[in-house]
Figure 1 (cartoon, rainbow, N blue to C red):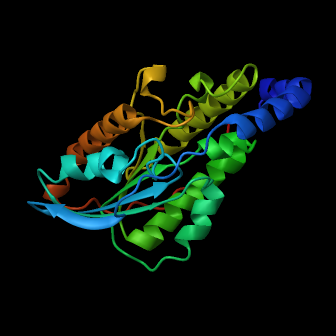
Figure 2 (cartoon, one colour):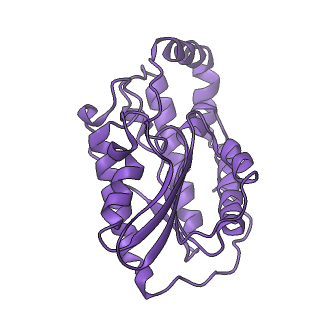
Length: 253
């Protein structure tokens, strides 16, 4: 464990625990976005899309999937592709939860996979090395499930700017989210089929949902725009990328 993180955990443990309980008690539980979670639309070459993850991927912060990440992403890609899409996301899921869910699914080929995970792992106090090993296992599981997909792992959002979190809990979780992202970037750099997607959203509370913890509709739209651009840049119309050599076991520096 990073020494600074260990010292902060020891020094602030009782305060962080108390604040965490308070946040869970006070923060309203918003519903997942309504609407279908599988479908087909658009014109052009087929593009099989899978979106996997947590409450953000499930559209919490939006009333309908059309206004959430999935709806915006499918709509943008449908201008150039016949998109066959599927959403596998649920509020509260950690990476370990998602792995368990994926193991229950029948194989279904996909060309592009977008993942949204990490916030629940941060709030659960997961060690960076453990989380990184789980990301490697997740990629392996997605290859088993989907064939030879190109995978985009969305960077853990800037938890240190979530208005629902008081200080010092906000700073503590924000620092861990940054450690996760640095480790993820180093690990994925050598994998030709795995990319970290950082939507680069401005740190503006106006982009947050009413609970101060989830992205609002404008953030979902910007996130989808960044994902659509990355997928278009991958040039799926020119053919699917070859399956690379499986990665070595992950480790955190």
